[in-house]
Image: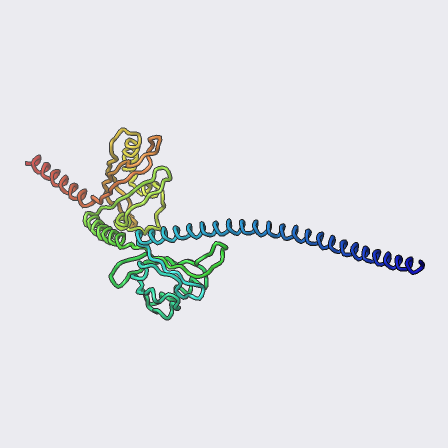
Length: 336
């Protein structure tokens, strides 16, 4: 019986041992399940974060694609603008190597598209004039813009501007050279210069000159002929109306001023008078002055007057000789 009890105790102990092992394994399994659940939650959270990151990346990518599309359109607009405005551009990097050039500039400078990436110095030392490259270097070093007129081998004229290339971050990153065709303006300037020479010669032969008077500011401009006829240098005269009127002969001053006042008040359609004016050497010359208001203010007051003045001293001398001859003839007739 004691053996049966012993046997029962051993079995009981074995059962308890198995139950403890089972409990231990259950606890381990529970821990494993809890750890797996935590891992699943972390994985789910990571997956959600990854999905969010993918969505954000998609948005960023879409934004980049939009920016690329905008830049493509801007470049196309830029290229079209340059083609249609005939503005030539050469972009140089900070080392003065050719970074970009358009067709217009290529034609003007003879820089080919195959020269892109080469230092400008190696391409040509005398692109348009002898010190062309030296001027570009100066702008790069001093960051002071340069502007001048240049002509190409075909005789066309361009306004060349050389300016530092400044990035959005306000960093100087090279030099931009621009060429604007001014051939038509140069032709007009040449024609105007020829006409001015002809007009000046005509006024000189007729002993005439022009004047303009800004009534509001009392600034008087006149042709060089007026100074020449009276023997004065320009810097010897004042700028106001009185600088000239003070030289009028005292006997002629009053009538001349009255003629001007009558015109300014609208009592005379034009200003017309004859007066003697003092030469630098002290003698007087006869002048005929004719002009009038050409511009008025918004309120109708005089603003700008323009006129012509002519030296009529020879005419007056001839007139005096004629009068003297008539007087002499009358005296002779009276004596007879």
